[in-house]
Image (cartoon, rainbow, N blue to C red; front, side):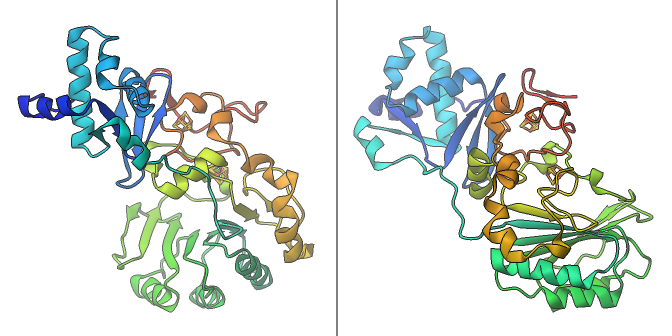
Length: 356
Ligand code: SF4
Ligand code: SF4
């Protein structure tokens, strides 16, 4: 696992008796093992808890020689090899005691200028009135991403009208999940993407085949799925392929719920919710003023009840080494009677380190 221990490397270490991780490399300790999450290179590196404990002590300004005294000589050699390996991977560096003050810890508070990051909209038909209100909500909250879940096929005219409506400066992504139709071809999505480059992803459910990027359109991703979506139960899957690591998501996860923070949903009948799959609604978009949502609802106890649940509060997830790269799900719970139970669709056991 670790790099070969050479005389040259040993000499370098001899001169520097301290080691610290770079501020962008953070240790996440789990029940059976730990990870180093490198927020710059986005690498998630798995390491034994024993080594993670040692690195934490080193980060707290304990010297390498004093730590090695707690171990047998052979174990001291393993520590040397581990540190050299971490250095070779650019996770940390050997240093003098005085150098610690030159490298302050990362500020782990999470701040954004916008009020919402995501709005999810469920649609059973093309409801232009509802969409106009969503546009206003997205504009006032400086929302970054809009996700439309259509249980029908948008026609070419409807798609054009939707994208024409949503040319908001602060919006960076429009994702559309809609029912497959055999008239959906490459020129349709090429033209749609060019008309509004925020439209970056389409998922076509109920397709005769499953394939990623069938259309091969630059800067646009498409997904054909055979599964037919009739409600929001397709969401909430937890798997390594959905793990994401970047500074914003990591800090958000440390401070808030990694799925529901700064997210609002409008379900198929217009109910305003944290997520379309949740039962609790905060009124209906048809008779709720956008100003009420932005000035009151988003700051209310009702809305923030779920957005404030962190991974550290969730049974089992709080001892998982992947907790800050994994998106939480509060709609589908492993124990419906416990609002702090682990997501239902996760098959990872942090106590054994195994997926079932
Ligand atoms: S709470 Fe679950 S179902 Fe709802 S958006 Fe998040 S992952 Fe999906
Ligand atoms: S145990 Fe929790 S944090 Fe770990 S992978 Fe599963 S859902 Fe994610």
